[in-house]
Amino acid sequence: MGNRKGLFQWSLALVAVIFQFTAQLITAGLVMDITNYFHASASQAGFMLSSYYILYAMMQVPAGAVVSRFGPKFTFIMGHILFALSSLILIFAPNLYMAFLGRILMGLSLGCHYVSFAKATDQNIPAIYFGSFIALQELLVVIFQIVFNLSLASVANIQWQSVIIILSVSSFMLSIFFTFTMKPIDKKGEHERLISLMQIKLIVGQILKDKDLMYKTLIASCLFSFLTIIYGTWWPTFLVAARNVSIGHALVSNQVLAFGMVLGMAYLLSSSSINNTKNVLISYGIASALCLLVLLWWPTMPEFLVNIFMLLMGFFSSAYCLGFTELGSKPYPKAVSVGFVNGAMLMIAPIIQTMIAGVSELFHCYYVMPNTSVSLVEYQLDLTILPIIQLVILALYVLNIKRSSYISDKSI
Image 1: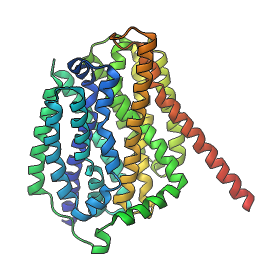
Image 2 (image 1 turned 90 degrees about the vertical axis):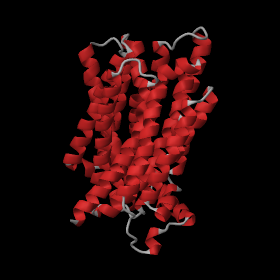
Image 3 (image 1 turned 180 degrees about the vertical axis):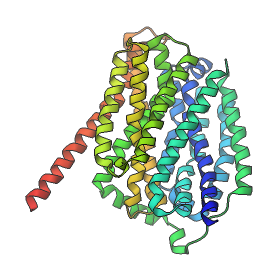
Image 4 (image 1 turned 120 degrees about the vertical axis):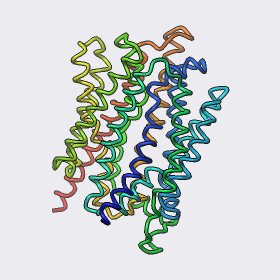
């Protein structure tokens, strides 16, 4: 009976984190509509939508203290209420600057969600299964995104304000639902329940000294960007430019990438690869970067090859979930360590998006006439930034492994 209650409480936390991911990844089908609505460039609209991650990512480490103090139930309920209110700023924004503010506050309001989910998992699921349940959550999140986006693509001419209104109303309803169904987490002891900011600072210092974990986190961050930047923002608009298809068709095609992620996560969960993070991250990282480069620079390939490469790109990029499973064997408090890794994985999204916006604006100013649509070459140059960064980090990680091995052999 206790296990059933624990699974039920974990399932409630899963619903909250699925909503959070939906709020992050809803942007793929909205870029073109928002671009036209605010008379902005595609890079400005993309950066505005990605601004969600700025305060969200910065909240991940201090969220450990907040969740430890108030518990997941409180942070879930307050987060959903604040999201419902802040989304109204975006809906009624008179200009792009107010839209930026609304989107940033939407990210801040859900800033404790993932850490709250990690805390709920730690409290309701046996420690031996912690990494597997975190990876399972990532799998279920992507499955939901496929269903949600296919449903969205089937609705003709839906405006972006309508989508945000749906999210706002759903968020408020979830806050009411969690009030009556979610139980406060049992205290295991005051010293274990409360984590001060000073303790968090010391824990983060220990994590930063863990070079192997830091490299794995950076690689996982790049792989996670395939979900946030490629799938969640730019890929449908790239397909429109590269394949000359409608945005509805592009949104449907985009789900092939997500389906590849589902297959990849399912494979990792069912195999021993989940315990061999080093080799998987390196091999999957190289493979996913190469798949993206091929798709970007061979846009005229046959449709069946496009689907194959998108499926493979999704499959290999799914290894980002190993950034969390690695924490199962670490001695750091889960609320802090998961928050740190999640924050690092999300912070790379606005950084890469800023680089994309910079390259896009330079290209648009010097190589095309102002106020014209984004060209295919511009998309190719912009999105090539991600695989280049990923391959550089992978090269540095391999060099660090060889250096550590050399020092170890020399000491013997």
